[in-house]
Image 1 (cartoon, helix red, strand yellow):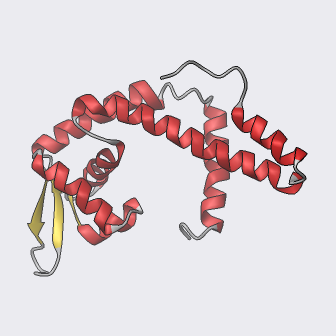
Image 2 (cartoon, one colour; image 1 turned 135 degrees about the horizontal axis):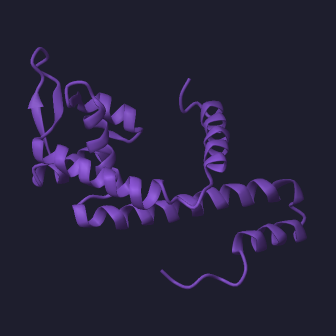
Length: 167
């Protein structure tokens, strides 16, 4: 990681927005840009923590979703919907997870057209280790006070609901 900048470039961009007459849009531009930059920072941290486990955050999410499922398996289409990713993206993640023995695709017992994703024993072990590291190194030490994290989640949830992300 590079050294910190002497000033916040997003705040500077906001000031430029204002100086160019876009006052009404300046705060939203700054907030949206800050959310995007923050997401990038957290994703880089998560991927760095997960790298020793042979995982990315996207692959970890697949394992976590399967780990939370009642049977340890889900139809691919359902997993894609819950993870809010296109089926192609999920297929790419599953291909890599399957190649390393962490998940497998199996035939649905009653629907011959449906494939299930199933967490293997090795996948469950990898999930537990990766989850412990994420909890310890990122989620417990996020840099966000608990009250701020809770408030930020509520703000972003309202936005996501209003945007049609969920009901």
